[in-house]
Image (tube, rainbow, N blue to C red; front, side):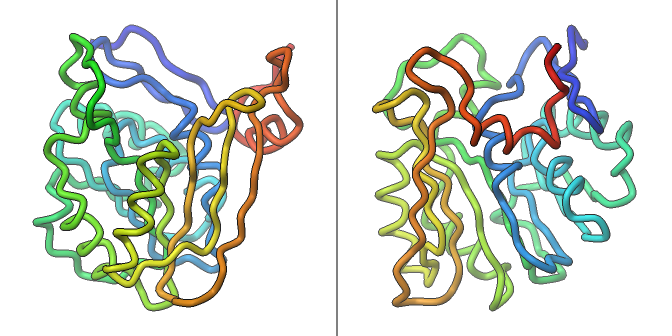
Length: 236
C-alpha cells in the first residue's frame, strides 16, 4: 500500500509504508557515478530502483539490468521503473546477485549495499535488511562483482568512511582498485560517506575529491546543488 512518492524531474519513486525511503546516499551515488560509453550497466540491490533510473537518465542508449533479492522491494521497483519514461531501457529481475548466472559483462556496476554492522536496529525489518550487513558476504560480493565486470569496467559504491576504508583493502585481493574516491562531509568536519569507483588497474594513485553537502549554517553547498540539479525539482 502506497502512502506517498518522491518526485524527481523525470520520474517518481513511490514510498511504501513498510520499507526504505529515498535517501541522500542513493541520490549522491546515482548523480556521481559515471562511465564513458557504458553500454551494459548493472545495479546490484536496486531497492526502489532510483539508482537505475538516475543512471538511465544520463546514459541514453545504455542497457541497465537491475537485480533485487527482496520481494517487497522488487515489487516497488517494478512499479517505479514500469511507470517511468526509462522502462524500455531497464530490465528488472528478482534474484540473488551472488547466485544469478549473468549472460554478459558490465561496463558499469553500481551498488548501495547494507553497511551497518554493530548498530541499533529499527522496528522496520525491511529497512534493517537494507542497512544492516548480516546476510551479505562481502568476499562473495566482491568476487562476483569482479567476475561480471568487463576488463575496462568500473564499479561504484557508497559506504560510511569506517566501512569503506576496510572494503578498499579487501577489494584489492579481488583485483579491484580505487580509481576515484569522493570523501563527502555532511557538515564541515563531519564525515558522511565515501563514494569510490573501482577498476582493474593496479598501482595508480586514486583521485581523491573532498566535498561538503552543507555549509556551517546548514545551507546547501554549490557542489550539492549543482550535482542534483538535473534530478531534483527546482525549489521555489
